[in-house]
Image: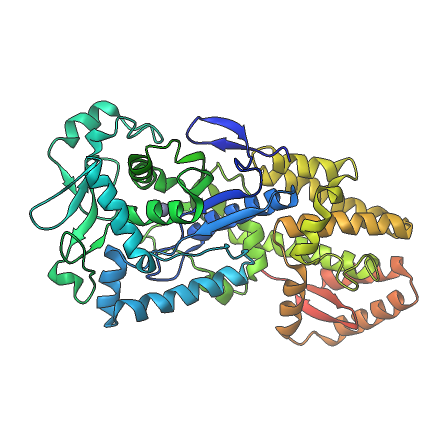
Length: 491
Ligand SMILES: [Zn+2]
């Protein structure tokens, strides 16, 4: 595999490899389970999923760990507001996250540790930081990290070292999330306060709870070792969260680097605007499903931009994804019967099958090879999709003249490509067929019946002409193996 990925730590594209030669050790900062994740969160998780799929198809297994933050300022505050105890409250939102992740076809991580389940590991980490002089306890029973003890602090994000020195003197930061203006010693263990209610654990420093930054260091080292291959997260986590992770992990182990390759995904906008509370545009998957969008359309739209650029999510993009999915369903129906091992659904091979085929599926030359090369070149998804759609156009133009072997090779490529992008065409097709369409006018229904008959006698020219007339009337035909549905073309 020759996958190159931008490394935030060096500012350069670097080759991705497993230091142990066996599996890529990959840690991702996961969701805070206090409400539904929004599509900006999911953009990052989808980019990480695409990365993992490219690595696995490239022939390298991935040991993927993604944590769940189930105790912090926000979860405690929101659980209290909901009148629930913390475990009940966070379990509900954890389940909701899993449902959304499954609907978006995210591969589950190999381990998904939660902060609450790893309190002893976090206490152990803090004890070692105290012993090595990187941390100090305060009179109230809290423990802070002394950033002056770690000269490399700030290197990853390139924060202003002067400002750091001036601001750092004597300032303590005990909020779990804070901004770039607030470079200071940060909290590792927070002494219990009345607003914590029932939440708290006994520790050598008294009752309290870990600070948010503590968990990722404790859990990544626990599952992946003191130094591992790739760490992913949204770009907003670079400072302070990832700086703090480095200071903690390298402070404990003395081993460096804690992480060889830092992988940050840029922000998401919605309809050209930043997502914010005041604009009320924190879109969730449920919001978009209520508008009639399928998770596969949303997945496609969220992966259509380069991960290192801000992506503008628009409903128009999601509708464009729907059109592309329809073209693929049409191709599968017209050319894909009995092709390959997936039978009636050659564009929906299982993930193990896609991994087993590996990069061989992309060896077909021209746009096929180029689609894979784009992915290996810093995960250039828009370019890869461009090559893929050119292949789709070629199949539409030339596919009917193909020999069975040519068709099989094309479907192997296209099925693998969709697998790498995690696009489950079968789920899309079946869900769309279930959502019963509105009753079509009689003349449209008659055209559709005529088209079905034309297809039956393999008169594809007439069938295509009829499909165009149906489209002009504002409807589209959705083919199923045993028939078809009629749907109004979306707004
Ligand atoms: Zn983290």
